[in-house]
Image 1 (cartoon, rainbow, N blue to C red):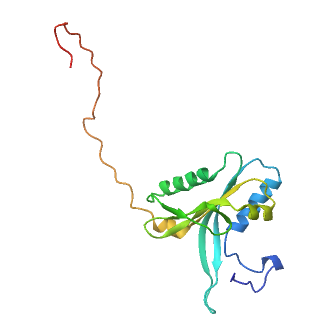
Image 2 (image 1 turned 180 degrees about the horizontal axis):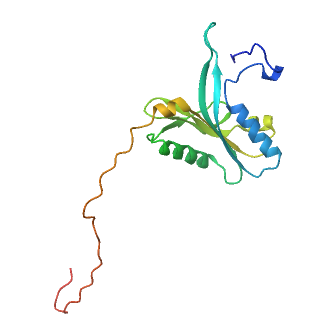
Image 3 (image 1 turned 30 degrees about the vertical axis):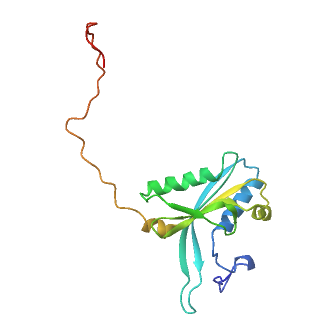
Length: 183
């Protein structure tokens, strides 16, 4: 993986800038799991740094990273969180397609897009990745491109004026002679 190298790092483990935010979210989930937390629902507005041409600054990409584990956590809880975020930002209904890249489980992950631009990926973390981080329960991750999210926001909601005379429904009981036929 190509990464941006820091010219004066504080240590060897911090000598490169991160190119993805998922490993740091996995480390945080691992710390919570290993400190015997029964569940964790976390998010981060993270920066990723992608190398550019030789004499240019790296491309800084903002992402919203979500990570969770616990007894109630599953793919559909994570998907509901992402859909709620999209709804609150007034972004259209996402198109969902299968995704097979690491660190996600190949049959339990998806790529999201809205009218073409890719918004991100979400899904269950692959069991081998969980073993690498020392996590003994299923974890779920989502990584959403913050710039693409903001670019997909639809225009403001439009509201109609309330009617001057709102509709009213009433329950009416009528007593009739037996000679009147009921339809």
